[in-house]
Structure formats: structure tokens, C-alpha cells
Length: 180
Image (cartoon, rainbow, N blue to C red; front, side):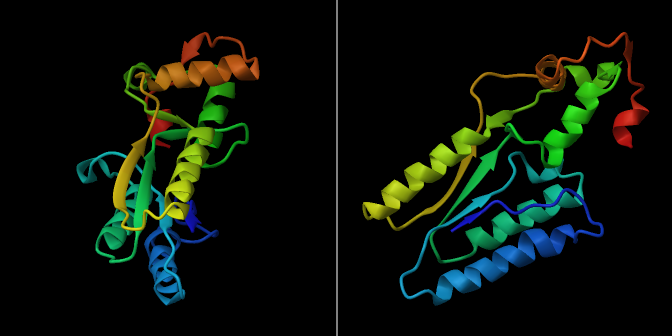
């Protein structure tokens, strides 16, 4: 089973607690009742608990804790910012920022930013499935799945800007715009 369900913030679509940790509890319940226990692969977040500033990150971290307390086999994948051809979640926000006529605020431009290609997540899941099929059953692991090279938030926004064909901005966004 692969769980890549997530929601960025509480709202009409649901709340982060229900979507993140409550759903993981339900998956563990299903996993426990299957005649042949299955591996649960859960896509979460990297970093430390002290960095959790949003309900999204706090509830994703709570789900990881639920899994680590669970006796069933699991692997938690902790990707960086996921880049894919389709826009979703955080990548939709970064694409919108890249398409704006304003540059990234100076305070955010050089901030470290870990990225992950969605294909690397798929390849990792494929490796896990092959290992499971070959008999490796005692999984209880957490893996970071990120590009080896370091990048910054500004570099990622600039790469999206180039891919979208948006001209280089003349002005920087004021810092308060990112807090919105």
C-alpha cells in the first residue's frame, strides 16, 4: 500500500489531522486485518520537529510517529519539494510565484531548498515492491529521497520561471508577501 495523501492546510477540502494522521491510523487498521500483511509505504516530510511551523508539517510528523509505533511493516519516504510535470500542492504555489512579475524576496532567495523528482519517488517504491516480492518483510524504515546537490528557494523559482517562459522580474516581492 502506498499513501501519498496530503493536504496543505485546513479548509473546505478537509483538515490536516483527519487527512494525515487519522487516515494513517485507518490504513494501519486495514493492514492489520489483511490475511497476508502488506508493506505500507507512506510519503511524508523531511526535517526536524523543531522546524514544524504549520499544521501540515505537524500532522505529517504525527503520522510518522504513529507508523513508528506500529508493529506492521512500513517505510516512510521523506522527499523534499516534489517536482513533477503536473502542478499540485506546494508546486502550484511555487509555479504561481514564478509566474508573478516580482522576484523572490531577498530573505528567501538563498534559503536551502531540498528537491525531489516525482520519478525518484516512484523508482523508490518500485525497489521496495521488488524487495517485498523477494521476501524482505521486516521493514521499519524512514528514508530521505532528495537530490544530492544543494539548491536554494530562489534557484527553484528561477528554474520554474525559465520553464514557464516568464521573463526575469525587475522588482523583488516584499517579504510580507510570502507570509500571506
